[in-house]
Image (tube, rainbow, N blue to C red):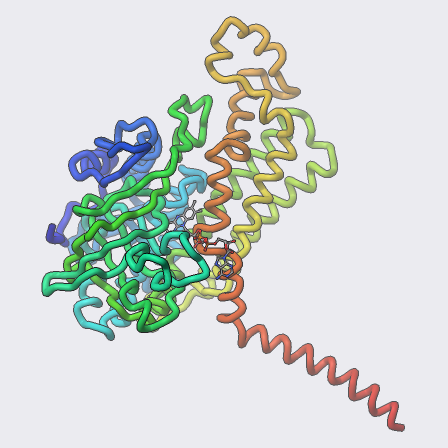
Length: 498
Ligand SMILES: Cc1cc2nc3c(=O)[nH]c(=O)nc-3n(C[C@H](O)[C@H](O)[C@H](O)COP(=O)(O)OP(=O)(O)OC[C@H]3O[C@@H](n4cnc5c(N)ncnc54)[C@H](O)[C@@H]3O)c2cc1C
């Protein structure tokens, strides 16, 4: 379907739900195609939270929306190409609204890809160097997404079949999504991509990871485009839901924030040229995130998520401690302090990234990279530790935890008596500990930990990339150290020789 760049601007919840009903993504769950994600028990909790975010942006319109530069419509601020530090900070404040609402537990609120596509539109000239149409497409797609306020998922990496071989080196050349044929009208993709979080969205951004190595072999796997999630031949195969379909009382996080992850299958999916931004150019694919600024703008969003998540875990840890009267124990204080330091570290990274932001080669205000690169490499280690702290504080309280059925059942008297805490009646203590369980022990909690460990990439290879890209800076420190070493050495040798 052709893209109409005109639209009505920022959406509201009902429009989000209506579009998902009318243009349903091809989502498969436990062997069946989901007919309506807005009512399906495994998905509807996350879908309704997602939709609510769009009402929230209107409730906080001054913070979350701005006037479209093309239509004058009110549009989401996360589509802005900031030209000043003030504009960049205004995007931060807007993104914090959704992160506060989801407590950072929905990694893929639409801001994430909105920032990525804004980066690609900003760096359109880089894409246009390969073909002027690709640059024009990036600008037009960004405008189309912004004016229609669409929500995107994205998928980058090939299936985890044989990691010792590249996409081209797999037993089946069409295991990883690959260009099967090309016509005057567009390209046809066959194969799969490993993962897309938030398949309950309108469109998908299919971009390369930065792992393509061989310019010739990998060329058929090198492409970047967006297409609607209901494009013929596109299928999403979901993992099992971590929303057990229970009440907010029983399952406070899973019942609200299940964003779902899915393998993406391209069964000869046709992609018109007007949707293509990168094509068969391995080197350009590998450089695209950094050169356009997409990775900077995405990481900016991620750091704000990290702050909201740390704030939530700090508040949760303190509430547990307070309820059971454990605040005087030194190791408990040490643990609270640890989370607080993590939070302040993330806030400091954000502040440094914004304070040192500078106009990039495309005239867009780009958050400074070093603090953000540090944040994205550090948080995957901080988050599992903070979850461990919740377990260490909650202890058996995380399993001594009745459901709302027990509370309203024949044992209600027992529950009132035996589930009280030093500073909480049973009816306050139980939901608090259920929340702590859902943040640290449930399937929802484990998936959050896995998400934080991996969603931005394999931490081992990210660390390798970090050392590579900050090599000059690291070597400058090494030079200082070696000069210091030589000073001592020269002194020693000169005294030996006298
Ligand atoms: C919850 C969740 C949500 C995600 N959402 C998305 C999404 O929306 N879109 C998307 O595109 N991706 C998504 N990802 C995927 C994410 O990008 C990958 O998990 C990440 O890039 C690591 O790749 P992998 O999972 O295939 O691990 P693998 O690459 O298969 O690694 C498995 C293990 O082998 C090691 N290993 C593999 N290759 C090497 C190597 N060359 N050198 C050293 N060690 C190696 C790794 O260190 C790791 O320990 C998501 C992941 C998770 C867990």
